[in-house]
Image (cartoon, rainbow, N blue to C red; front, side, top):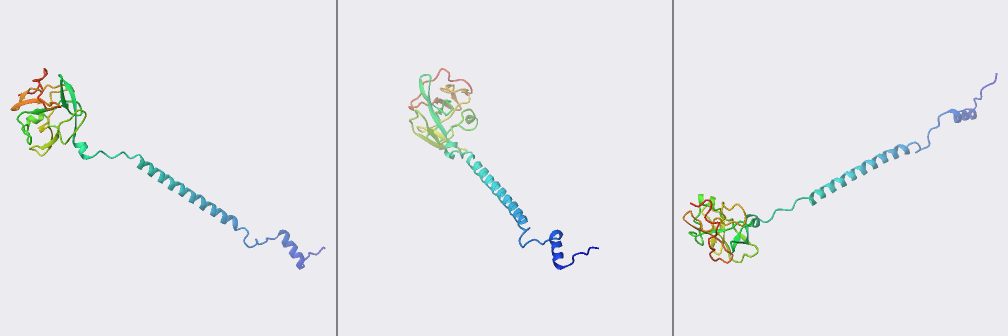
Length: 202
């Protein structure tokens, strides 16, 4: 019966062939440490991309924001123009509707209020001069506290019976206690138009 080699060298050889060898110091730990580092790097990169995306989105919103509105004076006032109606060069508002003056008015006060002002709406001031407007522009304060535009000292109005630009149905109308005249660019009295006298005179 063959005896087993139980000497120390024999046991060492057996351990080397089939036994468990402890890992060398530091070996076996690097892969776990490297994996953790890789995951941390991916997370950090994702956070940086998200931050850049938010920054780009914010700057885009600022760039596409609508421009601010114009100045209060520009929004509240009226632009005056000129047009030729029945051979006379008359003042119009920005939409081309004829402007009128009221004979009883003074340079500082309007005599057209209440129902009169509904039929002959006052032109809101201050007004700005467009092409061909060479007279002096000014304003008065109406009895209700609103500001009305004037031209050469005459308060300005439109007329509700004028349904389109180029009409002057209010020229020569005697209504609300006085005669209405279309306002000429020169300031001279305009001749009564053939279309005058229609609409809401009373």
